[in-house]
Image 1 (cartoon, rainbow, N blue to C red):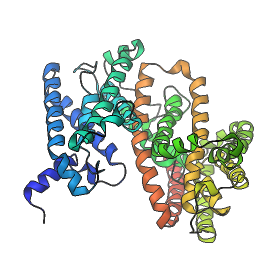
Image 2 (image 1 turned 135 degrees about the horizontal axis):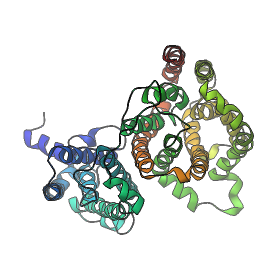
Image 3 (image 1 turned 180 degrees about the vertical axis):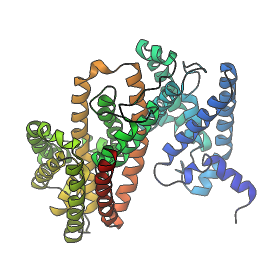
Image 4 (image 1 turned 60 degrees about the vertical axis):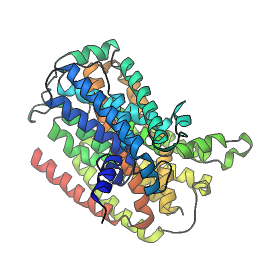
Length: 456
């Protein structure tokens, strides 16, 4: 049993235990900092000076503890920058939140918008590590663990100072919080709550084989959200950018390595070429047929039966075609990539799931579950990016201050959830079958049918 001083040190360096959680521990550390900041902001009164002084004291204390306990953590976890050490993320995130242009009398929506935006900015710079962050990592002991996160926090703070002072955004932040009424027959709801829920759904379902549409059929009527009415027509689609960012950040080392090794003479064997080949049928079939199938999203029966039948097909492919052997992403052939792109187009039918179609299609074509999942994630980058860009261009004039704020809240939530899902799902598919997802799809399909009958 560890002594009391050792437990105290562990609680400090792990950011109140966030470094001991599964998945991306740096993200959990940042989230702890944001939650502590929000709790203090909402309960400590209206003195802005008091807010900033307390934040500065907390930041200084976190830095001192990180430097003091850094050598102990390096020895205990046997790594120069242990992933369990998240106090540096807490300090960097607090620096990103320092002296932001938001009043203490701001409503809940502007506050959560700023917190979500600064969270995303800090995570972006912390992963990207622009100069001099990488050089600072080489400092000895706790200094090296802490310094690069402080650099990321400074970059995020400077970016936030510019972002939140842009005239449209600043004008909205200065206005009182707006409660939005739901449509006829629905209960009243707060738009931030709706954005948070939609962000969770986006982050969870975009990369799991369980279909986002099936969840939206239930969630949108309950929240009073109408997919074709501003600002939700933009929020629902453009929050996919955050999910894309989660994929890029998770695989950024691999993506950078692949980009550096691309050679024109060897293009047929490159992973990016495989992804491009898979996109050919996706573009060729999606453009003419997507609009024809979109009305099915308003048919709960069509969505529900796609969920249920897809569950049966998922179980069959998992049992019949699952292969466990050494295989790399580079082993995907051009033919396999093309047919995965064709199979992905089946997901245009609401309720099928893009991730499910591409992963199970890859397994049926001879890929291992992990390689099929990785290829599905890579393929999601251009697929989702293209769909989100088209929607953003089409509705760019509807991005008012409130719409931008809700979009940032939904995007930050989707980013965090998607990052955890990607890490967890890749680990899951190597060891376990898809049976729990198949069972869940059946239950969700039944729930969609029951909900549509009851709600209408």
